[in-house]
Image (cartoon, rainbow, N blue to C red):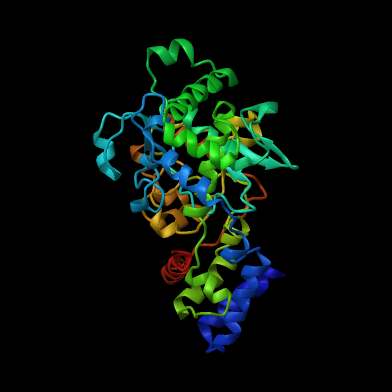
Length: 401
């Protein structure tokens, strides 16, 4: 019934001069029914002292094992907390954006995710494959029963520092001593990084004061908590034209209203992009092209399956949030698409993005595997006209700040 109403309203919008207030009301109600909340309702409080320490840690290359990479190497203001390239370049990388591809840095075979809203009260699932998530009030992660915190973001912050190629150089020492796929290896790296923080007297004193504990009681989790507070300050959601529209503080253009109705109606975007972050925190297969070698090599990335080893999770990735989406391309788990329009089209007409005559037999086989892993319950939107696509892009731009 809801879908019928959406199509009905959409057709009226295109055909008859409907009162603008009615369309505004419909869009607002659709957003709220799909879980949208304005930023001040979801942003978390933070401790200024811990946030200041977190900023130093976020920008410090001392927290990479080889000492040449920081969190800020791949999460830059210039690219709205992402890095502007398809696959991230980790340890050994130099420069920003596409200049980083010219360096001899290690390839991290997934697209760098932006950080907006990650410290919000209800942000519960992290990374493309959801390898850290809050489920039934329990943190599920690679740490198993030994998660260092009951807060999923704090646990998630632990992982990049121990990820090979991301912040750990893949050299002989690492291969012989640390590439064991065990929690103990991660703890060994974290202990090395913690000692580096402790020998920085200013940093150690600040951490000790912020947490009201002696320096010899500091643990790596205190570094992660500090970065979490920095996230809560730096990457808090800000008011957008859409949030002000919901609050009644501003108006949207006719094209933006049309795009919003498409988003919640014919485009079926809100079937997955719902809630305050425009994500359902669930996992879906979208048959977008693969760029780079993929997490599994040979142009393959099995997504959620790599973490759960459940065949039903093969090729599935977490629905990405949409705040600042027009500024955070390239798009897709491998950053294979540079245009947001192509990314949208890929949800209902993915074959238009492929050159089948240029594909190898392995590439065709991997595409087929992605297609057969799509859930029967996953909605397939109708084709959108050029006008609808333009309106949808305009609407998504209202989520920018």
